[in-house]
Image 1 (tube, one colour):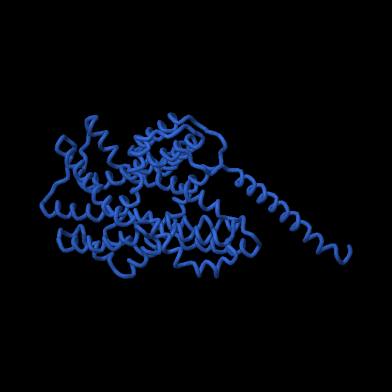
Image 2: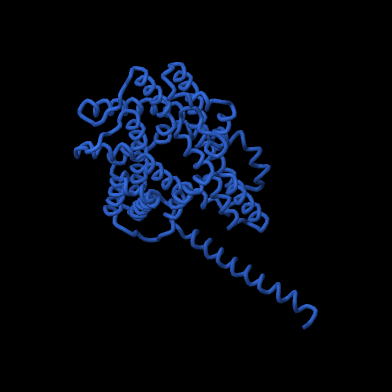
Length: 404
């Protein structure tokens, strides 16, 4: 055997593997480049309906936990009310799929288009999160101060224990549920940690695959792997749901008709509170099935190019545009209302009659109005806030992304 035989035996398979990998990556890049990333009026309306429905069910869930402890052997109306009032967790998964669909689109579109585009993506995502998150934390701080001073009872002792500076800062950078609890009474903040990490883990993964050179790919891979050791198991589990939204872009034809996709989602939501599922370890598979039904809805509307219908589109868009604000702002005032009820010896209702339904609707209207008012002051100004940050960050963009 010659002197160069052994090095050649070792290097040839590596070269072949590298070539095969490059060919696969090239095929993927070509596939992504041919995807139509436009959003039709039908798809836009479907996304608005999904977001507004999911946010509505989250708020209704929290109201239900405040007002009701249902009795056994419910009549059909109360059985329907019970099913409707406790769909919060499934609804958050709907929001994750929609988020993965939209953010996946943004992430794929910027990869390979230069450092300036990636820099803009980072600013777009951070400003989108913080235009609501920062005010929500500050408003929540004041709301929780009111809550603590009501002295409603030991049920709310946990609030003061979650109001340190360290917990506040941890919630700003997405470390709630990882190293710190959610800040104060605002339990829905748990999902913001997921969103923050998904927003930046996904581009890191894309850079590791499609980076402009080996150095960039290595940096993306190392950074992505490090995040896997930082985030919690729950964030990784729900990350699979979020990634289903990204995968919505891959099919090139509708899998199911729209009516069947929506019917599947309704059936899954209607069966979500079946004790059999949770007692037999089928809870998470049911959540995944619900997420897949949302994927099918998005897929069925993606290829519908019918013209928009003004009134229906306007109604769904109105409620969808402040779902993020509704999600983050509604919980602290609801806790104040709960504390007032506890202080006045309120006993949760065992069933829903006409009076209970009116109280539920009144509280729902109050929380929507409160959240919309804060939306008007904060989230509505997102584009202005984003453009301001981009102007201030222009020198950094030039330094880290020369040449655009």
